Length: 358
Image (cartoon, rainbow, N blue to C red):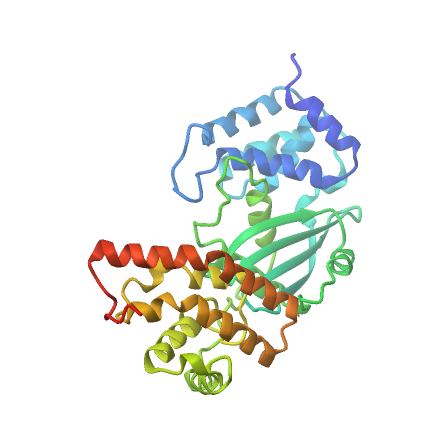
């Protein structure tokens, strides 16, 4: 019987004695047959029957390599019970020397979850530590972007212990906080509910099946991420101090206060004291002010307000100068295009944003 084209690849991956290599292959095979997470449609390259054919090909060539991959697929195919059962049936019927970690993949020990919040507050990196039979350590890293409705925007698996990963990831702008396994599951599940996350790119995102399977090994009933409560009184007090300061005094007018309050509350997480480059980019999206009835001169001065306000806010919250400079660099880079778009929109709509084109 002809050898499956996957057999040489599986043999090579098994020779590395690194389970993550074969887990990545299985996850990628499942990903190739899954619906596109952005459009929820199936493209010609994402055909579930294709995966059925792959499994059939593995079944038709009984050997250690195909049995090992079937054992892994039997665990990861959590959304296809029929195909999962076929894999299990043929693994059970064979006596190939499958690595213990693959045959007993379901006995994975997920033992620790850690949250690494960024000092600017608009992102968290969640780390999940797990151990396979045989002592093989895995760490899953999931990036949660709170600027994008707390969506999971990136994921990575490493064949290393979570303790080692944390030591290597030590960074002055990142905190470390233990979290319950149940809360980690709730946060990641919440992050995966949002379709605009880039995981459907043809450039390849290998990990959805492995991540989905991993988080289902965690306890349920955790608490989802809740954005920080907006304190209007605190924001008003902060603006009072800003407009009374030398940097804010030139903007001490009612229309600027209204605009500044909108910038504080409607961008990022709503934290008035922390401004990341991403938050600044969102603030300088001119379309955000399309329905704002303010003098066009006021709207055009958003970059100037940000240049004055961000250093003021960061000085109060103890943000280091390099992060402030990075945020201001985005203001400088986007200022002209922002103003050009505001003027073009005003001309297209025949509006003056409340007159006062100063």
